[in-house]
Amino acid sequence: MQFSISIQMPDFEGVEIEFSCPLCRLETPVSLGQIQHEEYIICRGCHSTIKLIDQLGDTKNIIQMVRNTLESRNEL
Image 1 (tube, rainbow, N blue to C red):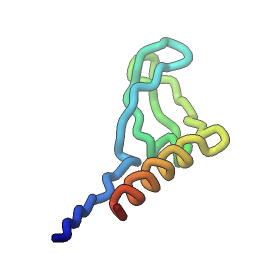
Image 2: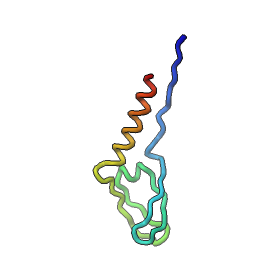
Image 3: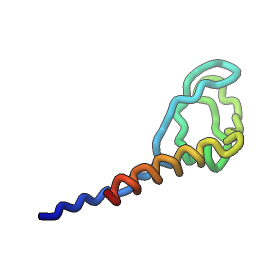
Image 4: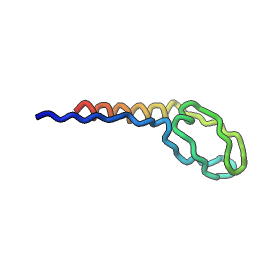
């Protein structure tokens, strides 16, 4: 008897986290994709323009590690 499990890879770039504005400290939701692509966002509180920086590519690396882990689990 054989079993097979297939996992559909979720869109991690669409996952949102709360980002605290460096000026007014209001939390604003940003997606991991926005961080990875180093986009500009506007703070919901003070309306400051904020440049998101993926320092050393950490966000990209984390997304890739999670994908690799799920893919290796899918091969079992």
